[in-house]
Image (tube, rainbow, N blue to C red):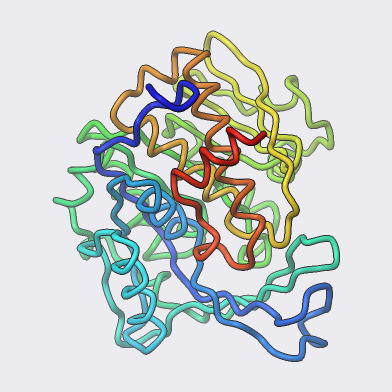
Length: 329
């Protein structure tokens, strides 16, 4: 328990399930996609970002998902390997391409998305293709909601969750709302909530809280409408205002670190990866407020650092970078 009460990174396996894609980011910030003079390709996809965030912090991570059997797909698999993420759960689809997203950073650093998925390889993952041995060996199983949008990936997602839960994994859910991908807002809300009660840990952003509750109030009362008794921890991330946490026995907030934000992409994934890496070996942290606060402070530091560089994966911090920020604050 060196370093401000932050536990060591765990050695248990954290398996991330879902999509990995390529974000095309304009070379110039603050312009619309149509006005962008050029684009840089940046690997992304929230579950893959979380896996790499864990590995960057010295944890043990694996990714389960499907990529296109194309140059971009093999490039993404190579990036996971390069960062030390286990790739035994990766499949390649010969009939569909790797997903692409064009992401523009508005002048305020927030993002707009345009997706190319018609269908993309990740949407075609079938339950019978899953690496069940890998999933069963997970101490934490992490996922989002994009994999719930269409079949057969939706069935694969539900099956993987069930297998992980039966094997005793902690289930971690970050809905990671991307409205343009859903047929409608109603459908998004319904499907995101359809697996709510299965998770042990859920992280939502302030924007997602507003969307899921239908109320613009970002307060405890509104957040607690999302509480379910099977939950061990509900987190609401508030960008530059840090995060709020809720458990059965206590609740509170942890303030953010102030940095010069360039690109918010991946900050939430960095936060989640840091949290999971620190609780994977000792879930009793979720019941000990002081220790949990130390972990959330560390997670906030990781999220903050991620906003200081463009793109998600290149910006994910090492443990020493996070401790430097914490000590300097």
